[in-house]
Length: 215
Image (cartoon, rainbow, N blue to C red; front, side, top):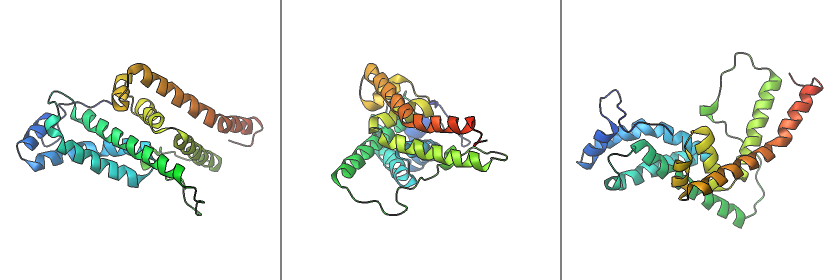
């Protein structure tokens, strides 16, 4: 994750100044931090949970916790990174809670339940995609969602942080509350699981191209 602790918006107030003013009693100053970083935190939360409802709750909870613990925030640290870690830790807790709840109950899914929700932040414009390409993209997105859902909360977190947000191993280890060696192992394990889960889909696509049934 790459954000500057000295970041300044159009209003001319940096993160550090906004934190100081908030601690001095200016609530509007904290609103500056929320507006500046909420979109990024939402994007991370969405990628970790896969749905907008949980992502919105994580954003709200992350900034609430950050506000409540602002006295503990080190002024020379990066506020964006700090609130990111709070959001990521809360997302991990929610994922683990959901995993536990799902393991305790076995209810047949209703029609339409669990349908893939399209991530509006990941859409890429295409001038004239073919029907085959569109179908393949939807199918790949579905397979990716299934593969991500099968990962443990920690594994899903490292995939989001490492391969979508470009976070370093040290930062991943800090979020997972582990050492760098353990974090590296989690990254490796998560990548291997995704590769194995997506391998049949990739092989199927290659076979279709070989016989000319896919453009």
